[in-house]
Amino acid sequence: MKNPDKESKFIGCVLGVAVADSLGSFFEGSFHVDPEKVERTAELNRFSYTDDTHMTIGVAESLIQSKGFEAQNMANTFIKNYELEPYRGYGPGPPNVFKMIRQEMSWKDLDKLLYPGGSFGNGSAMRVAPIGLLYHENPMKLREVAYESSRITHSHKLGAEAAALQAYAVALAVNEEPFEKLQPALYLEKLMAFTENSVYSRKLELTQKLLNENTSQSKVALELGNSIEAFNSVPAAIYSFLAKHESFKESVMYAISLGGDTDTIGAMTGAIAGAYHGFESIPNEWTQKLENRGYLEELGHRLWKIKNSTRPR
Image (cartoon, rainbow, N blue to C red; front, side):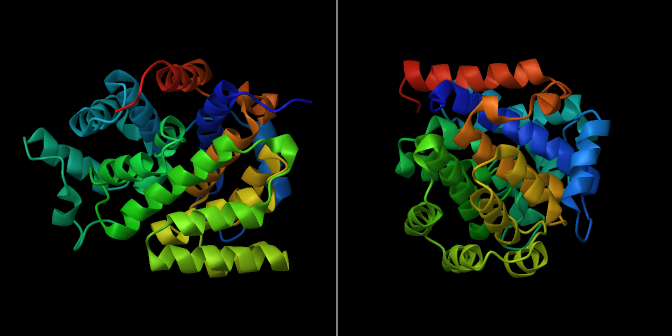
């Protein structure tokens, strides 16, 4: 077998978000999920995605249209997509931000009018994968764009840093070659060197400790978290990928088995695993039932073309 090419990794990342989000949505709020139940659910149901994928689509569409990041365009794209499909399961924050932007308020830091200090939920991290793809060779630009994209809805430093960390996790996965054997400790070292926040540094150190212990899902959920706060979900997604990095399917099922915010932790895990393995690794029986599969594949392909034909701004 040969390593997947970069185009496959871009498409795999976008599809990975959607299939894992869709499957995880069946179990959101569960205390703990039996992996066998996850597999049975996948066999019996169609894959319809939530706001996690819907906003990821918005990020990708804006990056493609602007040939890089343009904040007002991205905000407008979010609003347009939300108004077309408000039924995707959005939390209360983003629609209120969108309403304020519609009232001609600046897109910057509006969430601070809703949450003291801004939101540190995982909403900007769940959608950031296309930024990790487009800027996978430029960590400094990746951080800048991840922060600015987060400010549209999640301006708290813990929310913005989560977006940057998740984007960089995707970038590292794009740059790794599956058949050359991933080294989880080295991957985590790179993430620890990248993060500028002590909360995430501690969580990544704990991730390494738990990987060494090969511990239970319940302990991972207890110590890394499985809830909607960014610092209680991004580390869990990174752990899920690394613990089962030899298989896209196993990493996603593991993420969902942690319970809690299963669609978002699943989506973030699927983004990293898809970027690592490429789209060929995603079970065909999953993608065949995935809503808007063709359009999602097209977005991955177009992001790859932008990356290879221009210098993204």
